[in-house]
Length: 191
Length: 288
Ligand code: SF4
Ligand code: SF4
Image 1 (tube, rainbow over the protein chains, first blue to last red):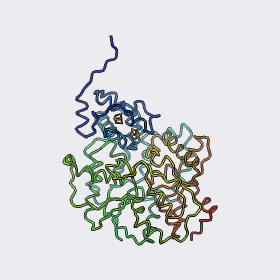
Image 2 (spheres, each protein chain N blue to C red):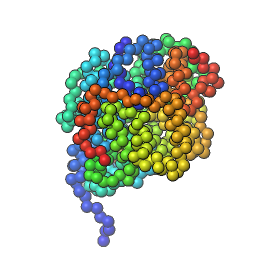
Image 3 (cartoon, rainbow over the protein chains, first blue to last red):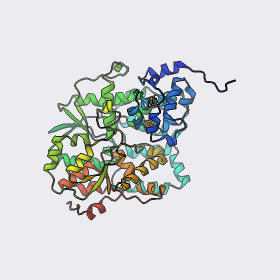
Image 4 (cartoon, chains in turn purple, red):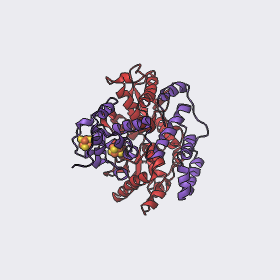
């Protein structure tokens, strides 16, 4: 008796492709994407397997995996795929689906980074790093982690150097069209 | 020459050195930069990661503002912004463009990645004419990162696996651009904030190779690459149990140095990894 058989859910591929085209079904598993990927060492499922699992409709497996979050969006995979599969773009689509479906990110600080960034854009229409960076460090728990691992001293020294070198401006530049920007960002829940 | 200009958010903040060096060399080359009025953030990695529609519409709003200026070229120094603007320009011209709540309202200017703009024949010639002190003896590797080149159907790059723009600029300034295999390998970009361990592995690999091919410095055109390679060198060296000391220059800073533009010292002082000692050793430091 075969064990752990998969039940393909082909609707998942269709659902994914409505925001594409990603051409996922053209994948013939050559693994060129994975071989050129610089971040495989931090992934739980390799990029070619993500594509395969999407085709097989393994929703939970791909929406909950580390890979879609640690992907650096470097576009090497999409550039080199012989079948024009948009792997990197598909990784984004899966992240967005995971957020909308409330699937918790196994890398919560990465999601917190994106959410803090967009919150900042919403506030001023542009990113104001002087507020965005500390806010992210607080919100994501990264500050606490740096404290616990003792790396905060080096971070503080770097922040102080940056401040002294006047690379953190005092005031944000806000724009007239910030309401248009807010409208664009209001449609999706971000976390 | 007058061109439209989209600086992007980091050039108003942490990448002030890049911003000031661009203003410096453009003034000396008589290029007038007309900033897109009321431009907004392109959304960067955050938007394309978790809000695709917003990523196109945010960049789309800025594109529409750009159509209102009369210039035929638009310069974008940040490769991330460049990539997002080009992606939006592409997406808003596809048959699925009606997915987005924004339309392009006019003819777009040509969107240029800044390094590619400075690497055209015409610009190389005009840059060469202004050289006061060639950068002889300076041996660099040019590091392009991801976003100015990939994916090629968006960026319209043809030499995306082995780009040449920065190499050409460096050679024209009299420096030596050493060929190396990691020109377009990723630095980890914003992961520096959320997964510094990943960035340490990716960037350490770059330092290691740069040293192995005999480079004295790394030349970049991206403020994220610059930050990742420049700011954490000591820490990454410690992770790798190595001693790395590679200044990370923007190509625009080196153009400024060769042209002897005022301000080079002010730009370089904002770096974290010492950019001066090497230039002094090579007798290239005489800037006012
Ligand atoms: S490179 Fe393309 S065809 Fe090859 S495994 Fe990856 S997605 Fe499939
Ligand atoms: S885009 Fe992501 S999956 Fe593709 S090669 Fe880069 S890091 Fe790997």
